[in-house]
Amino acid sequence: MLKKIFTRSKKYFLNFVQAHLLISLISIPILICWGIPISKMSIIGNLIFSPFLMVFLIISSLIFFTQIFCIPNHFLIISLEKTTILWQKLLELGKKEWLCPFTKQNPYILILIPLTTFWLLSFKKVNSIQKRIAILSGILIFSLTTFSYNSYNLNTQKIHTLHLDQKSKNRLIIKKEKNKIEIEDFGFFNRKKSISKFIEFELRPYFIKNFGTLNIKNLKIANPGIASFKATEEFCNKFTLEKVTLPIFDKKLTKYGWKCFFDMKRKLLKNNVLFIRQKQ
Image (cartoon, rainbow, N blue to C red; front, side, top):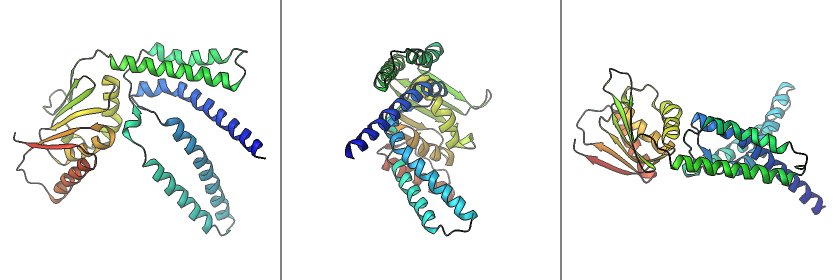
């Protein structure tokens, strides 16, 4: 009995690893083109997520049908809530340090990865799952090593400037030193309507594709405001931030403005980010 369970578990695990490696090799070129970082813990996360997803779908389907036929389903609803809460707690364990950003790569190399993978798997001699896993692992390790080398040795301009438009003086100056970034905000964030979406979907992919890093040495705000306070909090969530520099200001803030300021300070303290106030 135990031998049968072990055999089935081993078969399931090997099939899972093979599927994960194959999906990774297909998705990595797409993620790099979009400027999305790759997680070191993806295989473990997917291994945990798969059973949770199956349980979630089964319970949700049972709730749906019991609701239609007026069958008591209070126990199922509680089970679904407990499953969701447990899954959310597991998600909170995630760390920014697990993410591996890669700069823009040669598009021909990115296309070659999945093509080479399917070509090698097409050979008749590759008929066992162990051989397929070995080939997929070799291609994945070689690809990630090449991307890491290219990202580290990237020759890019050291200073980038982002403008809201050609006439606007509000700008964001980005300086790269070694593998870390320094940012100076001159009212750029204060003119953005949705700062969190801008940082997550535009600024972070821009940094990854052009600099290949999520490490920010210093975020300097020249003209503090509610939007820049929120932006600083979002930087704590999406980047590895070392230091934030704000000028000592005497401008009047609303109650909501002071709330955002102290929320930012608490966020910086929680993330062990050095907070400096200096004279303009």
